[in-house]
Image (tube, rainbow, N blue to C red; front, side):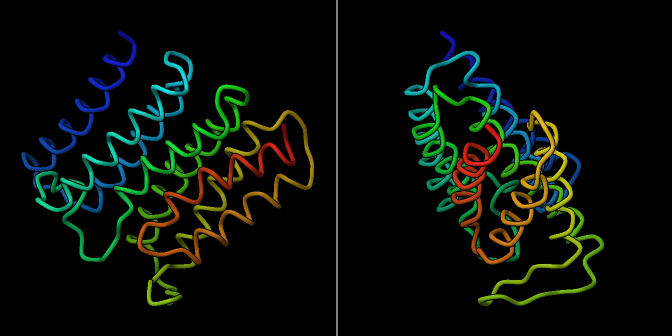
Length: 206
């Protein structure tokens, strides 16, 4: 029953974002990041209600749906953007792999990883698109210093929120994740960040 509720909530959220986008003619870059953040928040609370195997199953299922949707573009709120990315497919895959590795033993590490992936990346995208004046071209994908700074500050806040005490890791972990996010393109950060963030959390914080 909890799995059904999880799937219904996740699906309803994606459909609601799609409907709002079409009704109010919102930019896909905005709705994509709202979906990104919302998916991370839903994933972060999911271990409190459903077990590891169901989370992995559900996330792989959503990855399949995103792949099909990408091919036929029936979720314009996620796919209609002006750059090549597979982030909408990598996002649930990153959640699935992270859940398979870190749950159920270390729920906090899993939550930290998916929230960094969801919130830090979404906020960085918003700021980078609106205020990004200093562009960086790395491996044929463009990022902005303003967006990377936002990613670092958001991750710093999340690390401080999850960390039980002060330590050098408060700077080291956000800085490492920011550099990885800066280097990875085509949405691959959505796959790598939750796994790496959870691993760093376990190594230096937990």
